[in-house]
Length: 243
Image (cartoon, rainbow, N blue to C red):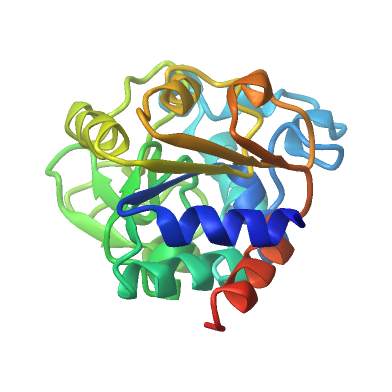
């Protein structure tokens, strides 16, 4: 049986599907990942992205942080791809219970998904470190250098930087949703970043992994598809009767 039809049968049989995704979900929308062949980690950067995107670096060098952040991280013109739109449609049909994502681009919501748990926060929201005032992404894009609040405080994105803990409420809800699922589809992630990677073992039901490269959890999966995730979900929706 072809992988897309096998995946379609598993989705049809499932009562509660949770999707857990990483950077690979958004690469087909033109957003580079970190660890892939063309990722930010393998590019010729004078300072490693992991250092620039850390809490310490942000607090000490907000000007350098924002220079990199605007140039390499923000992608305001990116549009949802076939994977995003398929997941939103499957949620409408009552199949997908929730999307748990490591991405910060907001493309799942842009595609129409309602239940999205963002483990690493979002670039779409920002706040002043002094008074807490909220600012949209447009404010970061419209300003130059370090964005400042009207009170004079530094505005920072609502993303989880290296050295910072994940939001407890978000992680707790992600674990609850995955443990209640009978099918977990993991897509576009190398499953090498913890604690999020450990979520792949939490589902009591079946596990599907969709990723171009091998992952440490392939041996535990009921189905492994090594392909571009957008194409996989396009085929899935065709097998299920269209979007």
